[in-house]
Length: 338
Image (cartoon, rainbow, N blue to C red; front, top):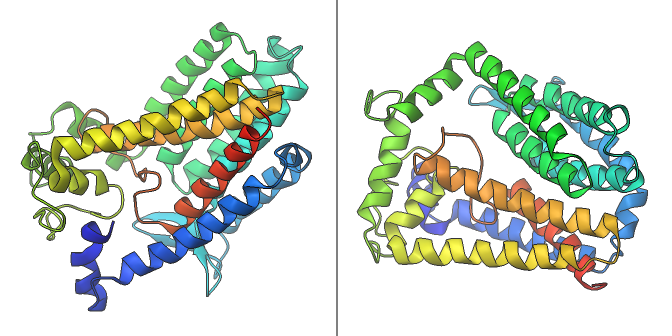
């Protein structure tokens, strides 16, 4: 992150370490939250799941209030409190997992019934979806829908019901994509990235140049060229491309292996959890992080259409870093009782 941000940081603030220092502060706050939450019995979150969910929805609504929410890059996703700016959608990721884990645990005997399981589950997703589409934040919506679908299966939902949801979701996604020209352009770019390399396909082509330039060992820390005003958002959604250019295939393999280890350990903790809620909570958090890692890497590598999804624990963004670390604190607490 320090290497990816140095050029933009120097250009905007005359200080190469501006973004790095801010991220370090967020990281320290996140580690403190991880430590504190790892001491809190995970069953506590079940008791407050509904208030947390309502609070998250109120925050999502607050982004549309004048002088509270603000827009950037055509999206209205942030709340500005003066000394603090954050993204409510990042908070929603964990609060929705907590609420869904509690809800599935409470209904585990009848979750396979359509009227008792699938219908209310679909309604919950629809409510969340409306808020995120209005921002718009299609990437976060995709992460939440995919994570929720996997949790629904883990919670006892029938695969046939989830398959129905997937088909409906894909149909709705196609409709949403066609309603917004920039989303349709991303799909066309994905299908033919060489069609307009200086226009619609510029981002993915610059990312592929960065990844390809890394070779086996990479150009070395700080020596990548694509972050010099070639690659859009080098410290955000595109940070994986900068990392690949500077560390090469070897570094990428190490990073993917590290996330793979996190997924394996997290799912092992979930499997050995003493109750259903603990299993769903730990499993949901780890699956959310793993899905986000995969989508970010795949999108910037041209394997999926581009999305505005940060790389967990790596991309610049204080809210994302703090929430991810705090969520891992919950997983650590579940592991205390396995």
